[in-house]
Image (cartoon, rainbow, N blue to C red; front, side):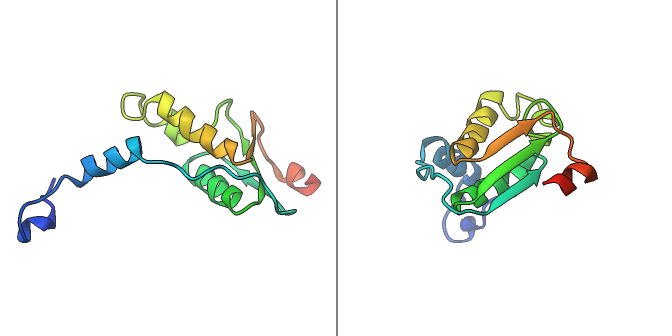
Length: 118
């Protein structure tokens, strides 16, 4: 890993440790309830789906997540080992998104027929 470019001026800092401290000790925005009439469906609950659900729910949309697996998280849950991303942290992040009013349906595989019924 290369040193921080702050070393040009005085001495480098450990950015990763600062970001981790901020994530562990910082506060989060209050959750909001959906207030818009539009509904948005998101297929897949991997990093992109969860991020989209969070930001759209913060904007007041009623978001519904459809996940084919039995648990939310996609590659965060299936591809990243628990020692790299503790499951308690993953669950807390997912629950924070759901607290914003996003609704999740697991074990649902969305196909063309289902899309036409929506």
